[in-house]
Length: 159
Image (tube, rainbow, N blue to C red; front, side, top):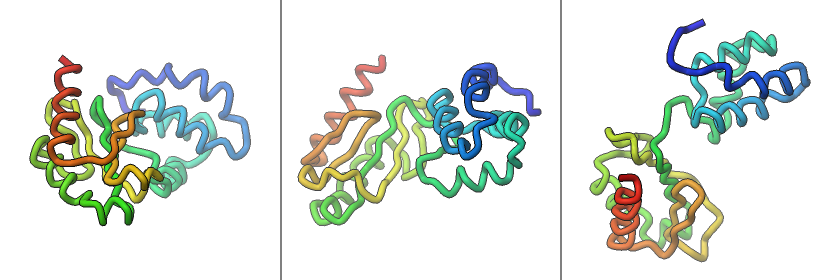
């Protein structure tokens, strides 16, 4: 077991409840990500130990589903829609604005740990295009100016 600052005791309740339940790996991974914000290697090793599922198989499941992350994300996870409606309504311009404003690319996190950017296939909010979600909040009808305003408001709120 790798020794880091990941508090594996936070998984005790999840593993007590699901470790012996056939077909519960995705549920365990979802709860793990809810706890840590991502799937730490140490947690995957513990899940393997407790469930008897090989760590390689757990990684196979985790990498198959796009909902799972293996690196920590920022306080604000920006999911920018790249679906057809958003694309034709200039989501690329919004992406460029976010990249310039935050100095990060898709899949990266700002050095201060405040923002992470993830381009997604579709958010299902086509009537709001172009659209992004930041954590649980949805922002639609985006323009570059509106996007910068949103990012600045979140920066201020985090201070």
